[in-house]
Amino acid sequence: MNRNQIKFSLEFLLLGIAPVFLYAMILCFYTPNLMDYLREMIDLSLTCFLIYAIGFLIPIDFLKRLWLCLLLSLFSLIVFFKLSFYYLFESKLTLSAFYIILETNASETKDFFSLYFNWIIGTLFLLIFIPIVRQLHLLVAHQTRFNSLGLYNGHSKMNFRFTILIIGGIFISIYIINKKTKALNIAYTSIDAYKSYHEMQDIFKNDLGQSESDHFFNIKSEDHEQTYVLVIGESTTSRNMSLYGYERETNPLLEEIKDELLVFNDVISPHAHTIPSLNKALSFSNYENEEDYNLGSLIQVMNAANFETYWLSNQKPLGLYENMITLLSKASDQQVFLSEDNHQYGAYDEYLLDPLNELLSQSVNKKFIIVHLMGTHSVYKHRYPSKYDFFNDIPKTKFPSDKATEMINTYDNALRYNDFVVREIIESVRKEKTNAYVIYLSDHGEEVFQDIDFVGHSEHRGSRTMFEIPFLVWLSEGFRKSDSKNHLYENYLDRKYLTDDLIHSILDLSQVKLNLFKPERSIFNSNFKTRQRIIKGTIDYDKQ
Image (tube, rainbow, N blue to C red):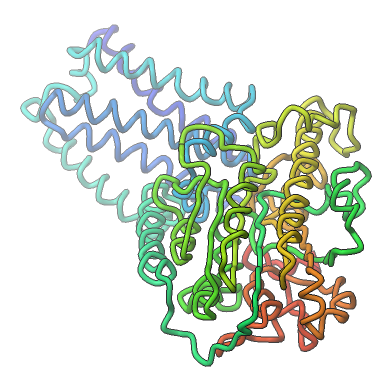
């Protein structure tokens, strides 16, 4: 082997392990536990070894280079993805993170990069991909020099013992990954996530996506005229609402009718992401009984109670696959999605008002309408028209910066616009002059430099503001007259409540009874029992 071949070999191999060294250096800042650190590094090192070892054994030169080009690029992407996740969310990549990816549409992906891409992420990208680009160049432009690495000539010149050693190393590596680091291995994790996601999707499609459920018995409901509207916001924390004491006037219109509202003060979501949160809120699932979503959904119950059900949404109906909430909506009698285009920002939420008014005007005795807003979903400045660009001063925050100022101001502007939309929905229902209510809550909260130096929502960071949500109820005059218990609701405003029990509360307020209804889980019921509010799997929210 001459000097050029040695130089070439060393350069190629050093470039190949550069991502592993970079990962090792950065990981030590995020994994203080030595055993966790070692497991992560063993898994990544063995994965890197497998890519080269399998490439070493491929006898056909073109396929060898193709394998290395594709797998080394993928490996670098994995390293970048894992390190970025540690940097942004201070956590390793988990199964739940893959679920969120599978539920994400193109617009949300664009929003994510717009929100989180910065010079640190950019530098990390360059540090990982400059070596791989150079390595790919060596693979393509210097084919004949791969003699020195045993990667090009094929089996005729391979040392037999070395080949056996490589094969043995492959089997040992796979064994170690299977037995010791499988939970950390991104290949296994992504495959497990894909399988379990589609298993759950099949359940939603075949059970919850149907108009009826076989689990309901003894259904009772009043037959008089009723119009019930559930408004689901997006990424809205009560912490930034003036209705809840925030110093900025983000709810001027709702505050005008505050005396007509039931403003519940201590309500949190079960998760900091839309899909798992609404899967529980709109079904019989809760943290004690995760699998009970298969018993049926809120829409199916209202169908069984002879309501005409409607799903009106400004959310996009598709992620990479048909998402769980879209499947839930299919149980309704009619679905309207404004944002069908998967690649553009959706319409402003006010464009839901016309189709809502059309539904309200239909001559149907019993209506149940779910309105799903874009609310204050990032990127916040895209959620409101320019005339709602109201807050431009420097806001109060424990983490002052130019980014914090921009994010807080645009978030508060989005909240002020959301205030307008919710008020308009209430006024539309008021005009019907029927037995009616409007419930407004958010799927989860949002961190915008309140408790931690972070913007967005992630259970891996999991600040309190990501779970603190508004819960408002407006009752029409007709409803107040027909509901003999409504005078008691004012006494319930400080109840500690978790919205994985939302279905029981809505059924109670709607005077719908069935075998699965549990009065102790309804915030509107005199038999309500305070329970532990568990978030992030094991944490008692009220004791953290």
